[in-house]
Amino acid sequence: ILESDSNTISNNTNNNDTYGITLISSQFNKLTYNIADNNKQRGILISNSNFNTLTNNVAQDNNNGISLSYSNSNTLTNNTANNIYNGISLSYSNSNTLTNNTANNNYYSGISLSYSNSNTLSSNTANNNSFNGFYISSTNNNTIINNTIEGNKGRGLTLVNSNSNNIANNIITKNSKG
Image 1 (cartoon, rainbow, N blue to C red):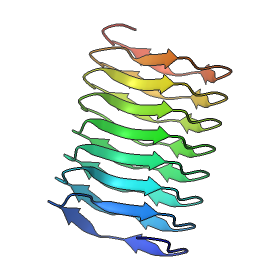
Image 2 (image 1 turned 90 degrees about the vertical axis):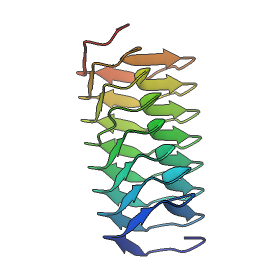
Image 3 (image 1 turned 120 degrees about the vertical axis):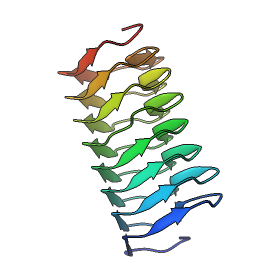
């Protein structure tokens, strides 16, 4: 979906392609109940797109699950990104809200933020990932609350070169390195 606004994309299955569902330079779209699996790159890619809502989508067995790049003020709720390299990743993306998403059994991290500021991550689950539950790098002023980060083979929560983040009331347990 390229340069398209105010659309509803619902109940679709996209598999065995290079990319699953892609929004580029698109605003105010709603993605609900879609499945993107077994794609060579990303299950769902949001790039240069703002004010979109992703709810109840599944991205699994892709190279990457749900990726936001240069995308601001999006809302992700009740999505699942399992069995891939990175579950949910934000890069250069600000003021997004991630609530009640699941990112388990991924090769690298469940949820990662890089160069992304003023995001809110609450009530998400990142369990049994091979390296990190949450990987937070070069990000500032994020709120990370009430998440469950458990049984990751590396660190539960990694924070690198990041300042003024509010990290509270998370369950971080049974990770190899804390």
